[in-house]
Image 1 (cartoon, rainbow, N blue to C red):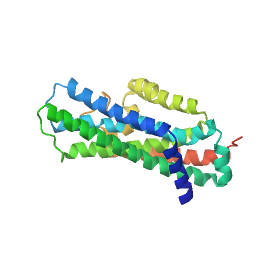
Image 2 (image 1 turned 120 degrees about the vertical axis):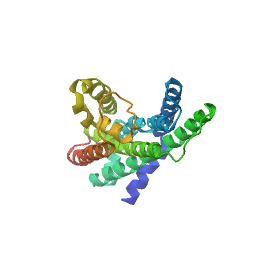
Image 3 (image 1 turned 30 degrees about the vertical axis):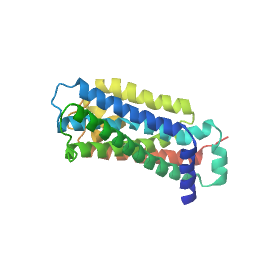
Length: 246
């Protein structure tokens, strides 16, 4: 298992895609925090810190794509056959991907957090306000956002195993977030908060909601997201075992 994990880490280190997505996540955080600070009419205080750093969780969109690349990317480049031939136990291969990409999701969240803290502190200084590094609300929001990043990376592995077309998997995943949870979710009201992206928002959102619809409490969002992550992990394992790779 250690060898499989090392192999997955080596793949991440030697391809450009994950690092480009990591950079994109950092840019999203920079833009989000800058926009939150400059568009608000509220005082520059601890509550705004949590709202600004909630953008760390939105990087989960990119870790979702990371996870999809882990499986669907191998089908696209036709390396999946060699991967399974080198390790006949497909379940161990997929388990290694789940572990590595979830950890990479944590890493992505941590990088976004570091970038976000630097940018937020710079804006607070520019506005002549004191940045409260010990704000419990801010750190709770950051912690939830990092977990959200990790969970969506694992979910992405499941999506990539279920939909082996790289373009198709990414399209379906993004369409789900934008269309189903973003538009249809507004029509079904409170039921939308049980969907995965909204559950992630509940986990990584600040005390002041970023969206208009009601969200689950933070602990509830964490439980729901853990259930979705477990379901997609099982999907990834069972799908990889049963399908022909040719």
